[in-house]
Amino acid sequence: MTLEPIHPTPLANVEQETPHTGNTLLTPLREVQPGLLLKFECDNPGGSHKVRAARFIVRNAIASGEIVPGRTTVIEKTGGNFGFGLAIACHAHGVPVHLAVGLGFSAVKRRCLELFGAQLIGLDMLERGATPREVVESHLTHQAEHERNYFYTDQFRNAGSVIAHEIETGPEIAAQLQAWPHVRQLTFVACAGTGASLVGIAKALKSAGYRVHVVLVEPQGCDSRNGVFTDHKLEGMSVGAAPPFLGWDLIDEVRTVSYEQVLSTRRTFACTSGFLVGNTTAACLSVAHGLARNATREHKVLSILYDHGLWYVR
Ligand SMILES: Cc1ncc(COP(=O)(O)O)c(C=O)c1O
Image (tube, rainbow, N blue to C red; front, side):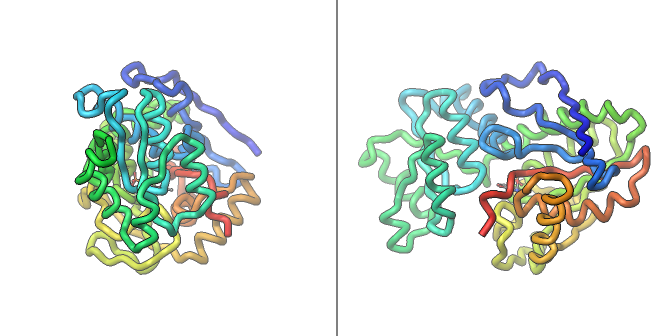
């Protein structure tokens, strides 16, 4: 396998609290599809792009005095990648993290969140049928009883995550693209949970002068634009509410993928590349791979490896 590691020097304006965060690989995998450039966000601490959003939100809240290390506890409802990101971002400042994690999340994921230093809260409430949102609301209402001063990061309302990707991930990709000086046009294939990474990266690439065609990938049966959602297994994308940060004027095309396509892409990609990717990544790859057949020297397809796939193996 031919890897072309392009590691730019860290951006001067991005404070590196965790030395290895960001600066992830951008590379084509020649055996897979040479016209497809892949950003290895799965290789961030905590295993995904979400650590960038978490770190930015925590850092800002500390700067504004909303989080006071030694006094404040961060609270969030997530069992996903944002939880791992928060645990890492908060640990750097000695700030405890309380997470309300739905009982549907795998036991391994719950245990790993604890290993990363997060405390899982509200188990009794969840067992009685409460939602993670209700657990957070109850803890916020009864802070005194819990002897905590909570700061709710509220990832679905906190636009800091868009800024994180706009000033960090997007410019990092633009800097790495200098390795392909002929490239002027990009088809960016991405999915949306909050929409922060898609929006932040697309805006930054446009600002850097690239013509960007944005393709939003959704699970079959979902139509986020019109508020239509089905139950699906692609944890992290099309999560049952319109992505709050997604501006639809930014989306040029929407493609849907079936779960069978996701599984088949995940398997093929694992065999050909040696990387077992997560479900949202496989969904995007199944679209990006086809589009990359038309890539040229000037026009490449870009997609994100959001996280690794071991979590999702059943
Ligand atoms: C695996 C995975 N893919 C994609 C996304 C979507 O990211 P964003 O919230 O930036 O839209 C998430 C978000 O949690 C995720 O965990």
